[in-house]
Length: 259
Image (cartoon, rainbow, N blue to C red):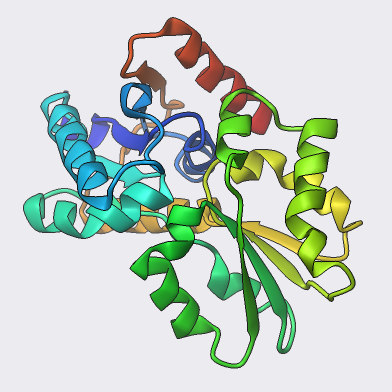
């Protein structure tokens, strides 16, 4: 296979990275993709930073052996733990991570109030704290830990009373406070975007990092001269590292529903 036609790998611990994969396919429809759901090691959020880095590097080696031409780390935890080391170790291929969409959220109006929904581990990571410090000097950025939400979505819950009740509980401490934008700071969370938007009655912008990550991946791949020049639509291969076919079917279902 010519290198330009080689697949782009998209890594996550489960179904969350499908939200990023969907954006990548929109931006680069002629590219081939491998969706690599590391279900054998899920969840990442309960592991140490060092262990997540170790797992991600092991997965990178496996994907490179499969002949991928670029890697998109569609997981905030793995991005924080491993992307810098990955780029140092594999400078020959484009490696793109994801980050919460704080910058665009702060541009929705003058001096906005922004709520960032994310896993407790992501909110505690140095990468998030530096991002918040960099972009929010004069604005109000509120961190909202969402323990258990990723697991709910991973189990297929994206709408209905269970999710609506969770959203009400998360935002209860902010009752009466004006919120201009909500950042979905985990790749699982875009699957409940409509439920979050409905809770605010459309008065707050709801943003995630998927589209920006896809644009950056396209830029990096084009800059490296690796874009697929074919005219036919690309393919997507789904892999679940625990070998459970029901997981790959779940990935396909979420991809179909999200698109």
